[in-house]
Image (cartoon, rainbow, N blue to C red; front, side):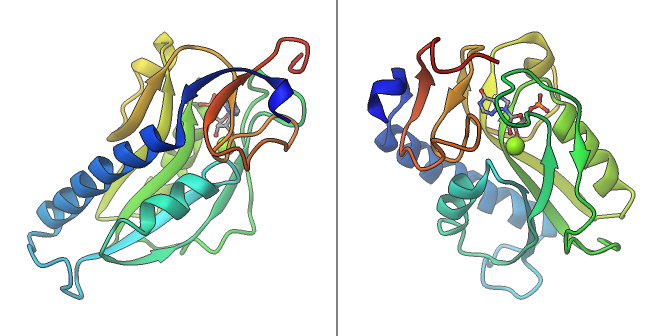
Length: 192
Ligand code: IMP
Ligand code: MG
């Protein structure tokens, strides 16, 4: 598998260190949003909505750093089917368990990467109609391209060059999600 990779953009250690910081910030913010300072208080409950499948590793590592009460409702949205390396439009899944009513809830929407912004726009538009008290957005990676940099987002772990990357949950043709670091593929491997 390693033979498919061109370069490492982020090591597992870099990701872990940054997640510690990000988690602390999220805890402070949810406390501010709810007006409560005790992370154990029962009203300090977060509703985490991870976008499948790319965010699985990120979410698994992030939520274990958040000492807050939470409910997790994964939902699906896909824009890069199979071997595509450019977006093909967003499809939301209808089988998610995200509640129809989000009134009274503090929602944290989590995705792996902010690229064109179409996925997050489609999902935030949908979630807003469900009336959450607060809706925050969080991504592991943001590509340094205009569409991504100008998109309003609350938490970004890392800004990366505008390249196609895999690893730490991100895939190419459903492969490489298990790679512990963020890497680029050799051009002969990724031809989207
Ligand atoms: P957007 O809708 O264009 O912002 O793209 C977001 C989605 O496209 C992400 O959730 C990923 O699933 C996928 N994606 C975008 N860029 C990459 C990449 O570099 N590698 C793997 N998947 C990507
Ligand atoms: Mg995705």
